[in-house]
Amino acid sequence: MRFYLDHNAATPADPRVLQRFVEVEQSHAANPSSVHAAGRAARAVVEESRARVAAALGVLPDEIVFLSGGTEANNLVVKGAGDLVLPVLLGEVEHPSVRAAAEPRGIVEFAIDDHGRIRPEVPSRPVGLVCLTHAQSETGAIQPVAAAADLARRLAAPLHVDASQTLGRIDLAEVLDRAQTVTLSAHKAGGLKGMTVLLARMAGGRPAPLLHGGGQEGGLRAGTQSPGLAAATALAVELAVREREARAHAMRLARDTLVAGIRTLAGAHLLTTEPALPNTALFWFADVDGRHLLPALDLAGIEASQGSACASGSPLPSATLLAMHLSEAQARASVRFSVSQHTSHSAAEQAARIVCSVVERLRRARNRV
Image (cartoon, rainbow, N blue to C red):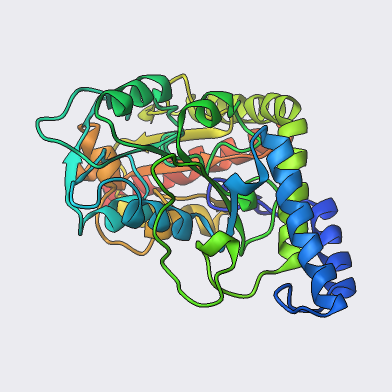
């Protein structure tokens, strides 16, 4: 039996969302940019979907941009928003799609506390953009959005919030009220991979596009639009907003059951502290060779992660955990478990027992060497 505990990387598609995608794909095959009747009908689906996303979030339709994923959304903003001659203010907690995109502009660092949260202090030099993740993907830590927004306003710089982990998990009102741009990933809330939502409302002008061509998405994203993905994404956002409280309650119950079981093991250190995502628990395990931890868990049926899935091929320990003052050995011996609203109590209990068994076996093997 296998236990999928990697929902911060991707969550299975909601059957209702998948059905909507298939229905629209089958009924609207035309290119939405075509001027004939079929093209106009396809375009109408895209714009209706945009309006539905906006209504669910309480924003304006022309503030919604459909993009291929969170990486593209973050790159679009970081490379094209704010004063481009000035560096970006961000912390080690940011996703690689934010940090790597900011490097050509230059980076000014937020300080990070021992719980993986930024300290929103005035930087030593001017910045052109402030970036903040709403919830850190590894630790689950909720970041101080209000304080970051106040700082950005004092610095006369726009605030970009990467809320890829929070749709359908925690309330988005504070982010939607305070940030100029927001990345939302529907595929982490029952949506389909291949489309994400960027909220972009910048009084001084929207970001410069990364791609040039037909001028789709208000000139921000050239390329043929997908009516099927747009309709599916709209439904995923609507369901995530409507069902958020029930989902979060179920996630928290499963997460807490998993945590309680793993904490019966000596040397299992929980790094996730509240306020945090209701579905996330990051542990580091003492006296374990981190190189063997994930493969051993996988062989035992536990599918989890060490850090961001986008950086999972990296041989380096997590920069976030190092910024939290963990040693390299501790960072390498850390595992993120992320459940969904469908993770049952019994599954969480069984998974915890398997994790404990695997860690104990690795410790015995290490002691024999």
